[in-house]
Length: 181
Length: 181
Image 1 (cartoon, one colour):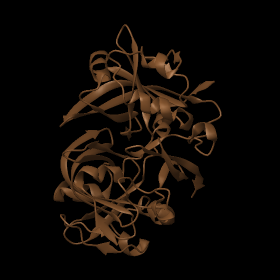
Image 2 (cartoon, rainbow over the protein chains, first blue to last red; image 1 turned 30 degrees about the vertical axis):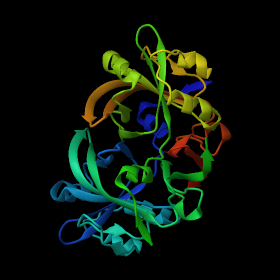
Image 3 (cartoon, rainbow over the protein chains, first blue to last red; image 1 turned 90 degrees about the vertical axis):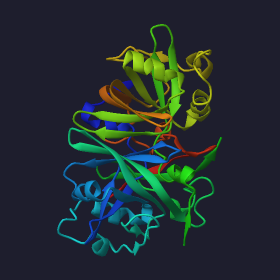
């Protein structure tokens, strides 16, 4: 039996892709924000889309510098991921408070977050605004992953690669094992 | 230690949101296609984005009818999900071959797929083309879920709500239990 879902909750039926930590650098300070909504868009050229609220402090930096990194946190970073999504970077140093380590990116000025399992360096390509949200389409210019956790797919069967998937509110899930067709 | 990932594989670092089955109706026949890439975009109004290859037979129908449904399959539908993503609906009746049951949608003409756990009825709002892919932003006009599998979040801890997440190639994963912050 089906039941109707309120329209403002409809997104929670398909929103459980991997949480990502967006890192930016405004010329003075590196910052981090958590996003739950992203998707690949194209393979060649490699394009991804991320959704960022218009009130996000990081948005200004992204629109100014035209770049950001997408870092993929795992289960052990649940608290840090929640923290980076609940506090503005305007007044605090989230790298410091979350205990994250900056590593130099290959192609962009924003640092990567060492503790994350995977990293996409992105250059902003297009931006679209819908109500309170910006849908940013970016070109991936470099990508890295923790050695041993990627064999043509992310090894989410391994404890170190249990990505975090937000179900809504205070609920998250992580991948179980890998299923082969 | 980090290792570099080839750019045409970079998307597989963040692509494991829930697979969806897009159902459409062209006035004569209902069709289904599988997508791996989608994201919510906004809550109020409720908007979602789906990525569809320009060669997809369903794309013509969506651009013509300006509507489609997003149905969310679960683990027991792995083979059907793979099938609907590997065959064109131009010559075959995928509902019939996959053994899916059509149910009437509330607001659109495209049928829903009863065997799926959740359903978003969508009206096309904007379309953007990037290389071979269309990014379609749509407004959710109705949503339903299997009774008992949603309490302000999708109950992916239950066997009947184990959504399918494509890791790339022949690899998939499903959610483990629900984690509360």
